[in-house]
Length: 163
Image (cartoon, rainbow, N blue to C red; front, top):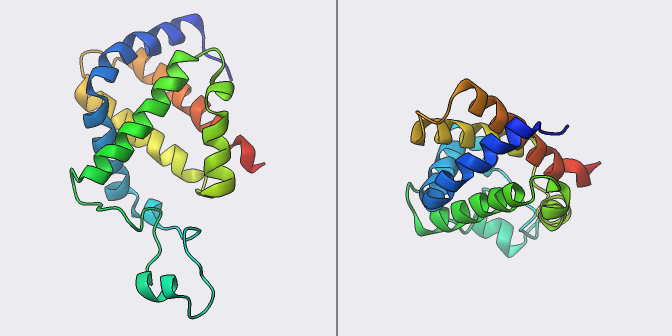
């Protein structure tokens, strides 16, 4: 899947506005993700899951972010939200070669963190909603379509190592 010239122009143009609010947008996107898709928190590879392990006893409930304060506006959500939006920014900056720009991130999520690939689609949806709420005048039908296609491309790149 590739973006048309018009779609690339829309994404890059909007990015100049988005990047000035990256922390707020990233935090709100993650808050929306965890609120709308609570299963996105479910995860366990961070732990030693052998029967009787100290980590399993201590944490019982396993989450992607077992050490994160997931309350609205927490410092950890803000920090991770910034990382997420920075990665989107890297993809925008390399819009003609997103796969190269996100290769290491793809490997990290597939081989180390083992994030369920569906979560990238959930995150993309939450980012679209956040962008629409922050930039209603700019988020036209064409912008929505361009960003949806771009984020689908990003999600595809992030999940390609799973195959």
